[in-house]
Image 1 (cartoon, rainbow, N blue to C red):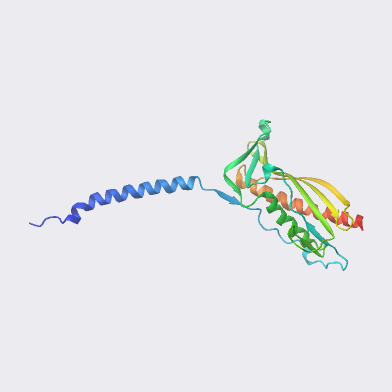
Image 2 (cartoon, rainbow, N blue to C red):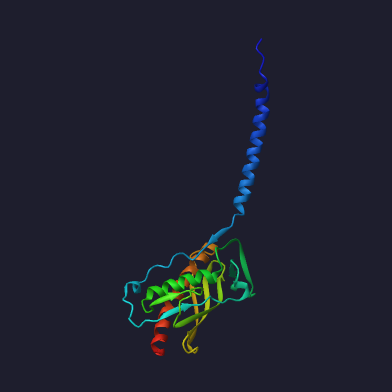
Length: 218
C-alpha cells in the first residue's frame, strides 16, 4: 500500500502557515499605505513671453535674497485654516507636506519668472557671489490654504517685497502683496494646486512692480 510521503503530510499545514503569513503581510502593507506621506512641490514655472526679449545693454543685475519667514513657516508642514469656524487656528495636514520649506520653493518660482522677464542682465540667488546692482528682499508671512466654507478653499500668500539699491544702500521701493487662488478640491491636493497658482500670480505681480520701481529709480 502506498503511503503519503512526509512532504504530502506536511503540505496542508505549510500551506496554511504560508497563507496566514501572506494575509498578515497584506495587512501590514495596507496599513503602511494608509499612512504613507505625500510630498509636494509647486511645479515648474512656465516660460513667459519675456524670455525671448532682448536684454537692454545697460540692464542691471538683480539678486533675490533668501526669503525670510516666521518660525511656523520654516519647516515643510502644509498648513490650512478653517476660517468658517472663526477660531483663527492653523492646522497641518497629517500625511501631506512640502518637499522643501515654502520659502525655498517660492524663491525658485520668483527667480525663474524674473529671469524670463528680460529687464535684468541676470537674476542671481542668495548664495551667488556675483556683484548685484540691486537686491530684492521678500518677507513671507502667510503660505497656507484657507477654508471660508467647508467645501471651498483658497491658497493664500502674503509677502512684503523691498527693493534695495546695493550701491547706495537706500530702499528704492517697498510693497505688500496679498495673493490668493481658488483650490479645485477641498483637500491637500487642491491646496497644492491653489498655492502653485498663487505663487505664479505673485511672481507676475513682482515682475510688473519691479519694472516700475526700476524705471522710477533710474
